[in-house]
Length: 252
Length: 249
Image 1 (cartoon, rainbow over the protein chains, first blue to last red):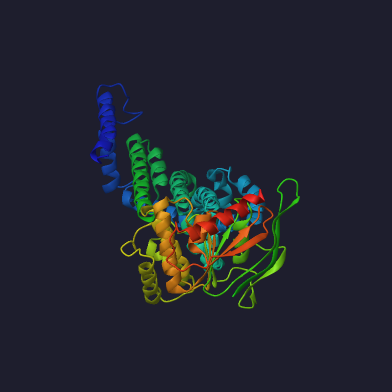
Image 2: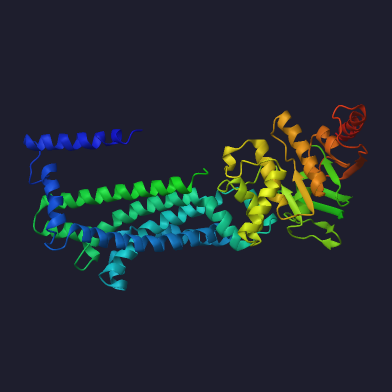
C-alpha cells in the first residue's frame, strides 16, 4: 500500500473534528479543536510546561525510563524464557508463580515500588519492567517450544553443546515469537510509563508528569497535546520495531 | 568399521506402560567405505535403529562400536541426515554448511573455504547466499549433505533422505550421492523403504522384518557402478528382496 494512502483516515478525522468544533458541536473547554492542540504542542515545544521544561526534555526523560526498564525486561525475559522452555520441569514448576504475578496490573505495583525504590526514576523503570517482562517471557517460551526438535538434534550431531544450542539454535529459532513479545512489551511499557509518571515521579520531567502539571492549571489544550505526543511516539516506536523485524526475519 | 552387536530396544506405551519391542537382536557391520542400505516395511523401526546408532536414542541391550570405540552418545564421527531437512531456516546455505565448524570454533576464513569447497562438491555453487525457503527440495537435501560432511564424519547415517521428492529429483540426487560417496570414501548407512533405491545404491542390503525389527537377511549387490536401474540382474535382486518382504506379512 502507498504510504500516502494510509494517512488519509487520520487527516479526514482531524478535518472532521476541526469542522465540528468550529461549528460549535464540540465545546472547546471540554475537547479543544485540533488547531488549539497544535498551538499547544508549539507551546510545549518552545515555552515548556511548566515554563522552562521543554517537550523534548520530557520526551527524553520518558524514553530513558522506558529504555532502561525495557532493556532489563528483555534480558531477564529472554534468559528465564529459554531456561523455562529448555528445562521443562523447571518451566512447569515456575508456571504457577508466573501466572500469579502476571495478572497484577503494573500500576498496582506503584505503591510497593515507591516503598522499595522511593519516588523517582528507579521506581518508574521498575513499573515499566513489570509491564514489558511478561509478554517477552511468555513469547520466548512459546517460541522455543515451537522449534522443530530436529534442529536441536542436528546441532547436537554436529557437536553443539548447551551454550551453542541456546545462542545459535533456540534463540534465533524463537526470534519471530520473541520480537512479537518485545513489540507487545514495548506497547505496554509505553502505556504504563505515562501512568507511572502520574504518581511515581517526584518532579522535573516526563510526559505523564507534564500532563499532570497541565491539569493542575486547567489547560485542556496542553493535556490533549501531551496525549497526542504520546500517541505519536507510540506509533513511531512500533514503526521502528517493524523495520527491525523485517531486517531480522528475512528468512521467515 | 562399524559393528552393530545384538542391539535391542523397546519403547514404553504412553498410556498402558507396556513395553513395545522395536528392535530385536540386530547384528550387522559396515566396513570402511561401504554403502549399506537398510530396507524394511514401514513402521518396522528403521528410523529407531538409525537414531540409536547415532546415539540419539539409548538401546536396552547390545552395543555399537565404531573402530573399537563404543558409541553411547552423539559424536561428530557419525553424521546424520534426517528425513526432513534440518537446514536452519535463519541461516543462508553457506552459513548452514559452515555451522559444524562454527560450533568447533574454527576460524572464519578457514571454515568458509571448506564450506565453499563442499558447496561445490554438492553442486550448489551460486546458491551460497540463499535462505532454505528460497531453494528447491532437492537443493535442500544437497545442502543438508554438505552441512553433515563439513565435520568430516567417518560414517553418514541417512534416514530416507530422498523421500517426498519427485522421481526425477530423486534419481538425480541418488547419482549425486554416489558421486560424492566415491569422492569422499565415507561409510554410508542409508535407510529407505524403496527397494529399487536400495539396490541401485547399496553394496549390501540389510532387510529388516516387521516390528520388532530383526535382520531377516543381508543381500549383497555385487554389481559395478554406474548401475543400470533396469538391468535384469538388478531386477532379479530387487525381486528377491521384495518377495522376502512379502513373505513377512
